Image (cartoon, rainbow, N blue to C red; front, side):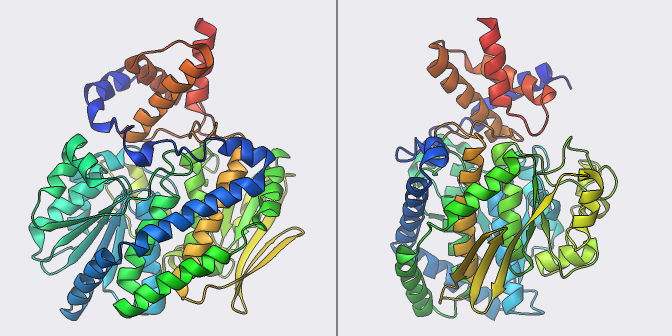
Length: 511
């Protein structure tokens, strides 16, 4: 289908994806100078990002009654010998898989927690184009993984409007007598009034919806940050806490501990990693102890900032045009399957929907190798370009960071494994966002390098195009014209180029 036909098709149903008024899509008023801070005032940037993360913890401390409700239902399912399923898409899909991995580390051999995300496990590496736009895919996936009567589903969507997750939630409500939980980070009333598919969930008596509103993201639309931090903590606390008193105390003490935590040492790492990229270098994260959290942050940089995704190390190594700026190595593994099992704490699960996308197969998944062999294989085609090692390790009750001469030994949170990963997630989110700011991958706090791989992101790119064009030239283009330009750019630019900036350049030449 030509890009013109794709644009026409999108415009016929664009209303479903026009979500710019939702807070998770909005620009945060207090971080509008984020790109400038990333270049010229890293201490200010770090201070502001930490403050927004503290606000997330404050929101959760005020909503422990909701987490208690979820905890009680999880315990009832476990006592009944039933399973708890966690479903998400994109960042919430990755948090679902992270929580299952933590569960398996704490409960070896247990099969009572089961996570799945839009596209299957391969979506940890890169999204499958358009998958999240189809509620029927979510329902089909739920059935394929064996969800049955008695099981409990926790459906997680930062915005509260993801079609895939909604499809899974509505189907779960039909299959089990247990309540289905639907977790999100936008105001309920706003979703109820403006998003018809969300209203279907809220009006279903078998679904318990829980709002955890944390405001706009530090980088507009980047729900991998505050929204997914909130939801990862909620699901993690509900599944991994011993009891409600311990849950409340751990959350309170972590808030106090993080309030005193010094994030300033990140400055040297941000400067160092950005300099490596600007000098045409590559990075290799060695992170066996914190595999899922490090893996998640590095792969989420690709759609957020239009970086080349991790490339397969078997077959078509340069299928995405250029090698990824960074890669992850699990240095205690020797083969692709060992690396995947170490990452997930289980065998990988593939949809195997060949009729829809060949990339849903296990063969494709295993073409990505994160074992100790990754450095040598990548070096064979990077040739003279150096791979710098960034090590993040668990050592003597500390989390040790090391990147060339930069070293940081972080005391582990006293509250346990979940909080180790939450702390690391928040620090890596800050780190990577500010690295990308220094690479000029956003303007102000607008995600101008977003890769529009689904309906919501196409709408976001079109809105940014309209806004920046008006700021720069004073001229206002129509929404339909913006959408056409986004689809044209998608068809022409490389994966590591900005479709928004390409479209702006084309508009400037038309004046």
